[in-house]
Each structure stands twice: as structure tokens, then as C-alpha cells.
Image (tube, rainbow, N blue to C red; front, top):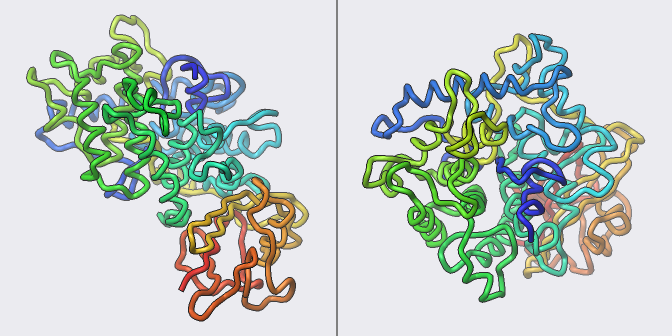
Length: 480
């Protein structure tokens, strides 16, 4: 796979060859390490200055109409960097015009029927979920018709469970893990069920190269591919994907990834010797991976024998007071994508972050569709777990007739309007509001019955009349 194809997750379906990026955290439950200890080689004051100047530069990239994303190359990854640095997207305005704030304009773009393109790929939706979350837009409730979680579910690979999008483009599965686990509910709950998390984790582990890292393309099952040298960027993203999925940073696969990154450190600068040479974007992705796993990139294994760290390198690439970061050490002007990747990493972020509380008077931390619009077609994300390893994942097309719908209506719709097909083949009873007794031919048996969870809530008895609201991520499971 070409590097350009692999980078579709960064920005659009026709991205630049320069790097960009995205968060995750494991144990800290917030997708960003907001402060580094005083013992770090880059001092808190230096990091604070880098953040202030970096935010100022990214604000200068906003178009006159308030946008960061549009046709061709786009800078929407700025939202993840803003959030990591403590700036709310709704507070970013062109010339102080609050009606054109970055969040409102981005939400409007994602809500249009023409977005992302006539031939979308899964990374379009993953990119949007990570950045909308960081901007304070509930990604499952962008609008009455746009549910980014349902959009991602539609790319589940039935023949290769655990992959999202063609398995050859492994980055689509890594960023599915980052988005589905990282873009939490407004109350901070992971929306997807453990069975889905486990399926994705299994695939990420299976693609880890012998040297401890990962690459953008699939390696699982191929000794040749597994034996190839890994990529710095994708190693950062993949280790972040595991950590945000609940894998501890003491796990063997994480420690091996950490060792791979350590082996690529350059002592006199703190840079990682990346596949495409020393550059800010690769360093940014690697540092974001470490941040996401709660591994300090300025101490221990990442403090070189010459007293340098990857954060030192990143700050050295920043123009001050201008605030932009250069892509290559030899460059004489800043790069937008390098500036996004560099700021996010220096600010302690992974590949998305919980949106900061806005300073704009009256602006909420979150925005999202509050109810279905009767007669407006939409999609819902659904998993069906038979309790015996048979997990089905799909996006269900529904057209509500009110402000809410029911579980029975969703399961009925899934029998004929699910992507991929076959998610639900039968439901009993076929009508009414009572307890669901059978799904896909598997009936309740003793204490093992069909249960339902909405947006990561505790599983309770599944009934046809269970109320489903706009954007709910639905998990149905046969279990005691």
C-alpha cells in the first residue's frame, strides 16, 4: 500500500504525504496527559509557551468562513490539538465573529448529505468522530441524520471479524479502535460493548511486527510482512489504540512497542529515526502514542544519554513567537500538519481529547442532536452477541415516526436494512412491546436471556418496547 493511501485517515480521501494526527489514553480516562512532571527536560514553562504559541498559529489557519475542513486537504485535525492544549473549538472564531465559530461550522459540514464524498472510506468517519469529539460535538448525534458511530459500524468486515474497512488497509482498524473507544459519551462512558473491543484488540495484536511495532498495511498471517521494519507513526497510533481499548501499559505488546520506539531514538536530538527520515509528524504520532498509554516521553527510556527527549525535539522544531512547527529540521517555514501533530504531542494529547469547557459566554461544552426528527432517515449502530463468539456488527437504517423509537423497531429494520447484511435474521416476538425471547433463532434458556445495553450502560432485559433515542449505540447480548 502506498504511503498516500495509508494516510487517508489523516484528512481526506486524497491526503498529502505529510503527516498529521489524532488521542487516546488508557488509565487516565481522558485522552490527554495535561501536564508533565517538573523533572522533564522540557520545563513546564517551555511547554506552556509552546502551547500558547502553537494555539495562536493554528488559529491563524482558520478560513474567513470559520472552517478548518473542506474540499481536498484540510486542517480539521486542529480540533484534537486545540482540545489537548485546552482551547475549545467553539472559542475559535475568524475575526471574533462568534457566528462562524469553528465548532458550528464543522458540525454543519458533517451534517450535509454530500459529506464526505460519493465514495467514502471508513477513515473519513473515524477522522470525523475523533475531531468532532474533541470539538465538543457528540459524534453519534451530529444531526438528525448523521451518526458517525453508525457510519463506522457499516464498515465491519463480516468475513474477517475485528477489521473495519478492507483488512489490507490496517490503519482503518487502528483508527476504528481510537474512535470507537475514545469518542465517549458526554458523561464519559465508552459506548461500545466489551465483545467488540476484544475483537478489535485481537486484530491489532495479530498485526504487531516482530520488532515490536506496526505498519499501515496488514501483516497478520504473513511472516514476510511481520518481519518487516515497523513505522514510527503507526506504532504510536497502534499502541494508543490498544491502550484506549483498555489494554494496560504493562502489557507485553505495549512494552515491546515501547522498546521499538526506544531503539529508534537519536541521542543528540531526541528525535525518532522514522521510516521517512527525521520529521515532526512522525515524532508527534509516536509521542501521542506514549501519551495515550500514560508513558512519559521525557523520562526513563525516552531520555537519551545526551539528555534529550522527543518533546525536546518537537519544541526545537517550533518557530517562536510564530508558533508553527516545521516538518523537517531543514525547513525554513512552518507546515500546518506538522504544527497540528507537534502541538498535540507537546500538549500531552493522544489522538483525541475531551473538549475543554468554553470561555465564550453561554456556549455549552457539548452540542448534539437531542431527538429523532420524525420522517428523517438516519442510522443506528448495533451489535448482536450470541454469547458463543458469534458477534455481529452493523449500521441499521431507520426512519423514525417520532422523537424516539423502540428496540423492536430497530431489530425489525435490521433484518432488511443493515450494513453489512445478516446482522439480524429473525426476532421473536414479531410485534408488541414485551420481552424479546429469541434473536437469530437463539432462544432464551433459563437464566441465559437476551439483554440490551444503550451507550455502554449496564445490560438489562431486552424488550421490544425498550426506548431507543437518537444516536444510541445499541448492544444486544445473550447471557446470564
